[in-house]
Image (cartoon, rainbow over the protein chains, first blue to last red):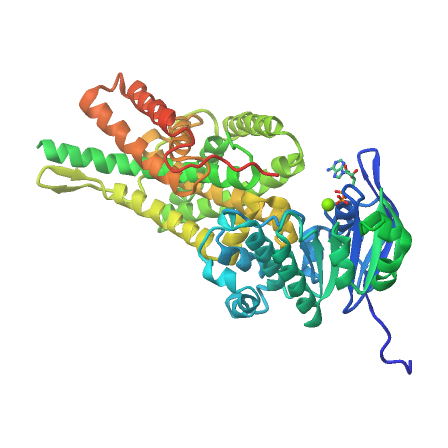
Length: 244
Length: 297
Ligand SMILES: Nc1ncnc2c1ncn2[C@@H]1O[C@H](COP(=O)(O)OP(=O)(O)O)[C@@H](O)[C@H]1O
Ligand SMILES: [Mg+2]
């Protein structure tokens, strides 16, 4: 009781297994994220990163294991309900609404908070982080470039004022310059108080940004620990950081 | 004289056309949000009209002061509940089935609703009054105020719907759901509620179309055949991927039907109208306002 700075668990994933039909995609995966952390989930293509996120967001039902958000059991809840609890997902491939304008994409991002305030009041804050979106407000989402779409996806997520944000490969298919910018923004979002779970194949960058990381291989966790330690680990360097 | 007849044809065309538009908009609303083509829309509208007719008859027999007004509001309430129940009982359980499966479900609904209507209300045909009676004559131009009431009613309903879809948070949620259901859920949108809403709204629009066409067709189990078919043509003509398209499509079909029928030939009316439709589709395969549907991932 005397310790007031007890680290609070934001998201706890315990022993989850997931299947597509009869094919097992996750085997007893456990992840813990403390409030305020940036945690990265790394792994090659097909390792099960997206599947892990889908179990967390409720898009995919798990057969075993549990997911807790701030201590509350959310295993098997519907995605819309989990979103309403303050967990926001920036999905793989951005998934912005192509026929909605940039403004409308941001508006729908505010959906979970619609009864608490006005989405327009939140806009300036988001535009300050992403000035390019302000210039393109009336354009339909589908007309943006890849990098702009990724920014819109993150901005849309920010509109929900989430407690924890899950990002699925935000660097995918983007030029290095833009990736750098987006990673800086993720860092700032975290410093403003949002907990981050960052899924990446780009281990180099992700390990620089993250406090801790987990590494997935064919549905199983093979490494975990503080990001700095992992980036110096021989085996990790060989397999993920391209050093020999 | 010629110009007066022309104007009369246009007004008559806009009157029936706005009913096609209402019904078409209902079909497109459901289609866009849940990929279901509701072939039973017409039969559901017929059923609602029978209920409305029954309320009207009883209210008159009971000597209430405004039987039609009572019937009108009961049509709104009944069709909302009816639409919700149909979605809940027949559509929601089949969400995961194939497109063909969903189509078969609404074909089944035609039989169920039509059969129930015959069993409950009988197969006779009944007179139902116009919303607004009488005629106005302005130098040979004969106008029924009912025509204007119908056009006005359709405009109000469509106006409210368009405003909602365009400007409100729920409207954006509807469009988001139509584009990408899974991502809409990630935004916190209860897409089941959105789907239920579209069925309620579409059934109300169908019921209003039924109630407004009833004075011309009489209330019978086959009363919606023409409106239903034309509403589908209107949706195809205007484009299933747009909300404005079906409305314009409905008005075009209504007006064209009347003009071709009067000036060319009633015998060839249907053939010519369809011919023009097919011609338009050759040049605009997704309809006048439609775009190539984006693949849902
Ligand atoms: N919808 C699906 N149906 C069947 N198998 C899938 C599906 N999605 C992913 N998988 C399989 O599950 C495994 C993990 O995929 P995923 O989680 O997408 O990997 P990652 O995000 O790490 O690239 C892969 O073998 C992939 O082929
Ligand atoms: Mg992935």
